[in-house]
Length: 354
Image 1 (tube, one colour):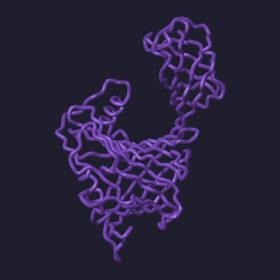
Image 2 (cartoon, helix red, strand yellow):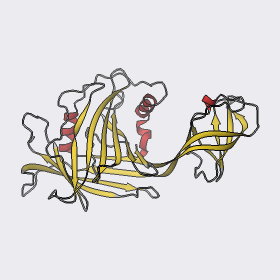
Image 3 (cartoon, one colour):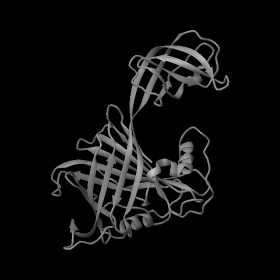
Image 4 (cartoon, helix red, strand yellow):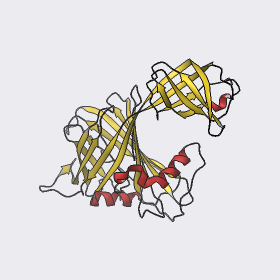
């Protein structure tokens, strides 16, 4: 199953330089959604019409290229790990802790989140040990972390903690192209409604990720006239067909707000049902699509589109979140700055495209 809404339209998400092209706005997004103090962007006077973005992308098409990074996670519920403060760093403001964890599978640059520590370690308050740390590799059975508290003690102790590792699996690129939606000859109909047809192609270029890398071609069908009485959104998405894959249909429920949205607004776009073929006999799953308007600066907002995909047993398969943003000093229009796909599998694989 594949659904790629790209609901707010925009061109290249990051271009050949990846997130570097969107560094300022990504920094604001990261700080605002994390534990840091929110940053700021130059003030803008935004009036966001999601319907206008949608209509523009349907008619004009779009392309975007982003740098892709794949991650996997591994949790350990409660471990007692031999730990030694080995040296002080950062002008005596932090300590390197050597943690022994056989077959930890982490490499330098991966991250470990430590939680559940309730006792001070030597003279280091436990609150400084609970947190997320970048791993400094040593060998297959041990590694260093930098704890933001200096200690001169060097005795070994047992660290009792819950550990969650974030492993970087691979990097690559993803390119998405959607052609302008056009009428066909002969006319194409879906569920009795005339539609415009656009070709959507997604190409991943990387290796070593799980789930495996893949390329898709999808044909999207947009209603020429909104089939829902009283609804004025132009070109609502009625369905799609993945080449060699599933057929999806919105059953005429696709909708976006036609009036300007503001901070805190959220709502449902629709539910797409997936079938083995266009006869809609064999249901293979569904996807629920929602939107939310996030605001972190005075007049600049972020638009988040979330797609939760379920299999035929109604079990969650993945959650995709597309975040659009705009730096008023640089960008004329909102653009896709980050796509995150989280898979509900044993390793909780995650793919981020920026």
